[in-house]
Image 1 (cartoon, protein in one colour):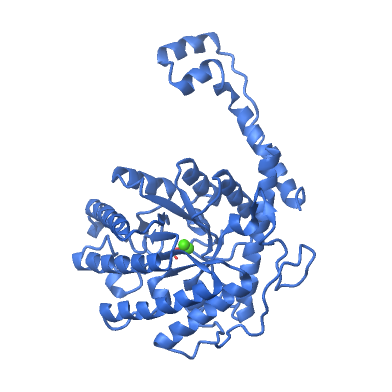
Image 2 (cartoon, protein in one colour; image 1 turned 180 degrees about the horizontal axis):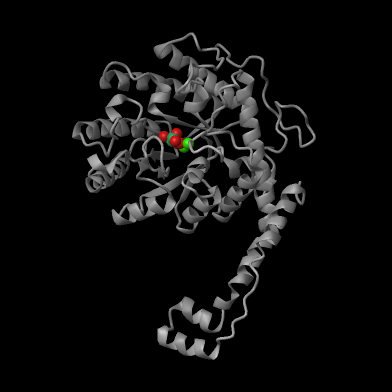
Length: 440
Ligand code: XLS
Ligand code: CA
Ligand code: CA
């Protein structure tokens, strides 16, 4: 079998003092943290699209990535990428991957050819999974790239496009099932609009719900037990994406009676595009019982588009893992690196270095979050801040045993109110100190 990263050995853990760019400084897969191995908390996944098919093209320039399979085309290229993907994951110790149907096999000249291409590559992937023990975190379909999807898929004004997208989801779900995928993702693609001047927003939303309902029914019918996930994003490619953010999706699911069947896949860069912090989206998903999985990346705060960079921000990673721990873990979801190397980082080892820094950032974030939670520093403060709801009139409010009249009477007698400081800067200092070194 041809090796695509021959000059790179298996990446090992060398500890925080190491200066080796091709070694982990914090990610020590077997290390126990809060009763579980690090790798069980983090459940890292490779994104097939950015890692294997991404070639550095941007709207202004041609491919830049130096990859050993660049000369190949069609099915030969898809086969080579399977070898490269499993070599890469094995060397990094990544145990999961995520894919779109189109990442793994070429479109072909007809729907039939596309389906046949998929079957060939899926068989190959299955063999590799058996050989390496690597698993599928989630599958999805690409119903946004081809020109037929220019006006959307499930929200296209053309019913034939709706049907075509349905055929794709049907096949992608069958594949995900056959690969033992633990989740299936619906990211909106072009489900949104460019202008309301030509859009029946009511019909499009109803159709999106109809589409998701049919997908849920088909998942049940074929015995797919994985979690169905919706991935919010506010804009790009369309001006307005219907799955804008956590609360928009939740409102949509509840309106159409779908909230029992879906959870959310929260992506860091999509949160920031929506004008939220990553933690905001995670926390709202968590408190609503909807946190299913995570796309771990980051955006550039000075740019208004989806840069999908490898995550290096320790503050965000810490607060993400804080939410994950409070969620009782992320399984059957995981942390998928929906991230790509910059166009100028075109060498094969840049790909390894980028995954290593992403994995290290989240491993360190996990350690800090665990210490913050074990010491209860933030939890105790928050509990104290709301303690007036534990007794007296506050308790009655929470229990629903009071009304406006009683509250008005109470207020008349208690109109000298003493407030406590929110201590934001003090809490930020605490988080900083835990990151600086209150944990190994
Ligand atoms: C695009 C999305 C996409 C989904 C999978 O912005 O992040 O890659 O994760 O379709
Ligand atoms: Ca994503
Ligand atoms: Ca993205």
